[in-house]
Length: 275
Image 1 (spheres, rainbow, N blue to C red):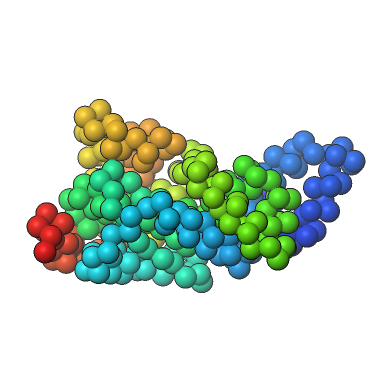
Image 2 (cartoon, rainbow, N blue to C red):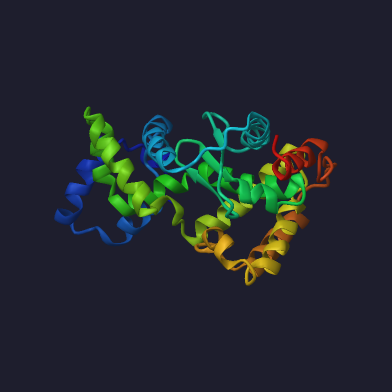
């Protein structure tokens, strides 16, 4: 497996390599390996992610209730702190959208729909989906997807350049194309795996992921329009249940907090009866 640390390439050196590959005639296998890694630093990802999130929030309606937004942020921060990538700042926001969905943007930006909160019967179920999105950030899946879509050289040139308008233009293209929601199935599987470990490390019962998936099985046909975005690029739900259950069985014995909390139920009640 080729990694950034073993290659120690900067975007500038990669630009040189990309220009030499056709000349050297060795693009084949190595090019495929490069397409599956991220060569950008945290600072570079955060710079791009800030632009993307700003553009995305021009199109979204962020839910302003501080009780709900603070709760989601606090739950998300617990999972982020116990992830394999706690060194960046995470931002968790609630979107006023009834579809059962959540998504992550490079740089630590995670958006949770109201529909997902309402669909979750327990705090552990909700935490499972949020943890999955944290897993996308930990796995740097957004940056990998962007480099596949737009190319290493194009992104590197933007990061090295001084013209902020170019970054804004790319952000607009990314938002309108929906490329950030088109992770491959292997990325989705990795995010599930990371989600289980993050919940275990956070003291939150990872079986919440299982019960959430089981609920999805019962609603995929009845509410296909509401969950279509959530499942469009994911492996089959039955496969995910099997894989997650196998992983949970291998975890060390632990004492988890209750799958629910008084605060979670208060949030659900607040959504049913807003003040």
